[in-house]
Image 1 (cartoon, rainbow, N blue to C red):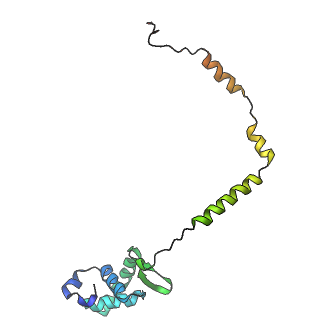
Image 2 (image 1 turned 45 degrees about the vertical axis):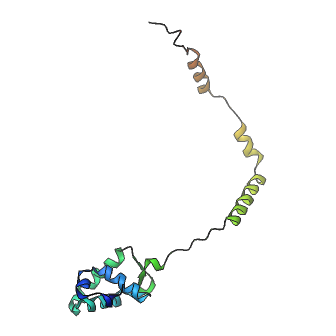
Length: 146
């Protein structure tokens, strides 16, 4: 959709952010806030005073609208033109993981291993065993009425 192909009535019913989206899509390049808003004001026949009074609100609108992204030096563009590229290299990742695991195995310290193998019995353990000593398990067949 191009801005020039829209009727005046269609343009007047559209929001500033929708108009900005059409302008950036049509131009296909990044633009400054003032340049985008000037095109919008021309399309809507807004005066210079209206431009000055509404440019700050337009900037805020661009800042909060998810379809737009602010670039350096005051330029704006469509977020869809700036997607992140993610590359996954599985073979290298697997090799690196295997190397890290083998290094960990080679670097184990016997003192560290011994501290996990050592078992000590505390006084709390004895008390737990005593609590279970009086426990009786009964079947339904041996159920006693009290």
